[in-house]
Image 1: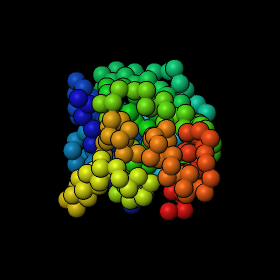
Image 2 (image 1 turned 135 degrees about the vertical axis):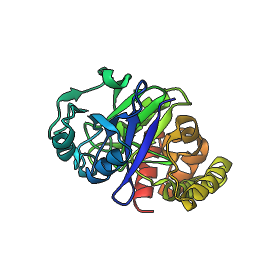
Image 3 (image 1 turned 90 degrees about the vertical axis):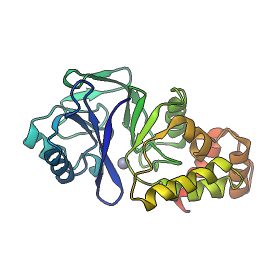
Image 4 (image 1 turned 180 degrees about the vertical axis):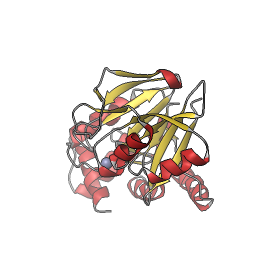
Length: 257
Ligand SMILES: [Zn+2]
């Protein structure tokens, strides 16, 4: 199993470090919004950064890239369809990233919705999905449409259920409060809420999640379920034609929740 470390940044971001398979001291850094906590962690633990992987252009995902490149001279991988300062390798769906030094390989999925050019890194039973999928939630639609985001989440749903999901924000408890408003009788949401609360009380991250779990608790991945559709229709006050219309309603509901 892939070894990872979440480095907390800002109020609720995680900058994931992916450890090399042969040599766990070598790490790839995912979405470094801030260089300081990463530099502090790698120097304390005597780790060697080897690459930066970026999912999208938001400042809280790229703000530390230049500083880390200056400090460690790292190659920067990022989405082809977005402006990423310092990017060396422009990636889109169908591409793969091979990090020889780390013994790691990821394939790239396009997942527009939160931003227009957002990508995810998939490999080693792990999905680094930036701000596309959160545990029990999904990213806001800053640049994309409900249809695009539904399709992106649908793409994730095609991956094996035991895929671990490395989201970049600790939003789980707030997302679960919304999820239980959408599906008050979903027992998986109730059980997960209790587990997540215990973890947070102990100062532990709730992440990574798994796709299996998300398919049971995440309203945005359950827009084809009768319980989510009827709840969304009740909220909208009219019937909804298809899962994309359900998604759009649930997303707008969450934005104002
Ligand atoms: Zn973002």
